[in-house]
Amino acid sequence: MRSLSTGARRFLLLAGTAAALAMVGPAMAGKDDNSLVYGQSLAITDLGPAFEAFLNYPAGYEASFILYDRLVTFDEELNFNPQLAESWEISDDQTSVTFKLRAGATFHDGTPINAEAIKANVERMMDAEINNTNRPLWDPIAGADVVDDLTVTIRTKGPYALLLNTLAHGSGAIVSPAALEANGQDSMTQNPVGSGPYKMDSFEPGQELVLVPYEGYWGGKPPLDRIVLRYIPEAATRVAALKSGSVDVIDGVPTHLIASIEEDSGLQILSGPSLRPMGFAMQTTKPPLDQKAVRQALNHAVPVDAIADKLFFGYAKPSDAPLAFNTFGYRGNERYDHDPEKAKALLAEAGYTDSDGDGMVEKDGEALSLTLLTPEGQFSSDVQITEVVANSLKAVGIDASIEKIEKGAFWDALRVPVAEASWDLGMFGFNPSNASGSYHLDSLFTSNDDNVGRPSVWNIARYQNADVDALLAEAKGTVDPDKRAMLLGDAQEIIWDEAPYIWLQVNDIVSAASADVKGVEVWPIIFTIVRDASY
Image 1 (spheres, rainbow, N blue to C red):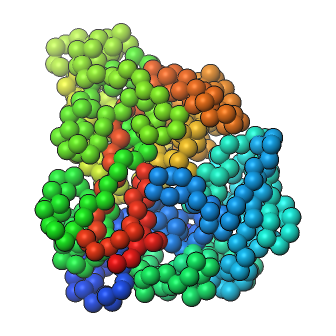
Image 2: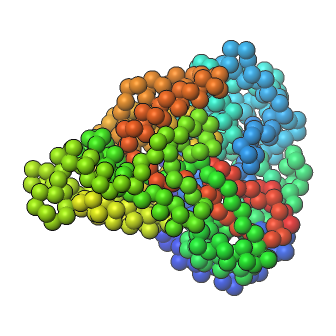
Image 3: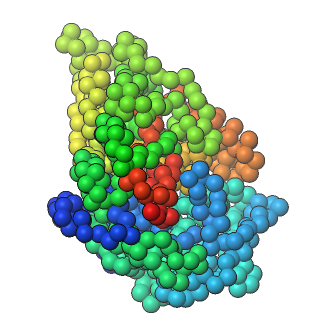
């Protein structure tokens, strides 16, 4: 059994909010000169790469990139860099990769990192009972073989061009097999034993994680004496804490507060385009959203340009594809222009008209009513965007209501069986955290095995198209990048036309830091990484 259940972690998250807010004041001001405090917009409740993986997202992942090493890792441009593996060689048939490990690297418990430890980690993450998320990343892996003490080969079930993406992903974190043996398979969730430059000093789930240097780190002693990751839920409070010097780094900077930070010579904005397109997933198996004309009408009803311009002040761009603009495999399409009259015409094509002149459309005497689900504070301007979308739908005759949900409960509310879903349109933004467009499309648009139960991955729209399934399956096994990009582009054209989402915008990631802080990276996969931070 888990040492801390999902429900218990959520309780701790809610209970800890008030405490987190209280700590923004004097308690934060006494930090050491050579420490760094990162004020996060979401709370960390889980520190393990398996068993639901580093909740809450993305805060837990950001912690994991400090606590753990991986065989390979990303840099700020999402290139692959060596970490525990000094080098690697891909087989001619593209079905295995052999890694040469660093000599002398150890886990935080002092045990050695060798080929047996890597093999144990790979086999652990292949187990769907242990690693019950991120399955598209690990299912293609067939196993791992020890060649010698510092050489390991990872095999795949067929040609798999994305193995390095999987290993650089958060779930590729290498944990101590000895600690698992001593403390249990789920022990990493609260008592992580990795091999990163910093190790855990203390952890209050839902409130604060304190990290200190690991003296035995293979890369030498890290530059800071302490890193504190602290949950500060309110954006204005995070910005105020940064300005006062109580924290050194923050994420989730609202765009309307960017100018006030830029005007302060003691602060710096850290931003860049993300790989996460935002939108509203539609329950495509439920009438009337099972009709393409209705789904396209909803897209034409929403002023996406105005949302990007007026809510994000140039730090967002309207989507023209299911993938973000700088994701591998992206292919742009003709955008759904804001055209309320065209939206009304498409609704009429589906049988929904304003027959009694009251401004609302109906069919067979029944009004078209839709419920929009939104979290509060999970995504930038999420509630404001939902209000704009709801008002835009009302303007074309749709009775649109809003259901708000606490952000800690949001993810579970999206992935429920059809009969339990209280919403018709759910705000969602998938982040391909392995930097792969193939993973992104596969997770959202490959048909569910069970299309009435809980979605197997993130196909919460219940989208089904045999041609798309075939294109995405072929792309996963295609090594040639040009051919793979072509397959992904063809799939996007079909998905875009069938409109299982209201497509909205791709936001920039906007974080901020004190001007004297160096080495903080903003990765396009929405993580703010403080692993290499210094002064």
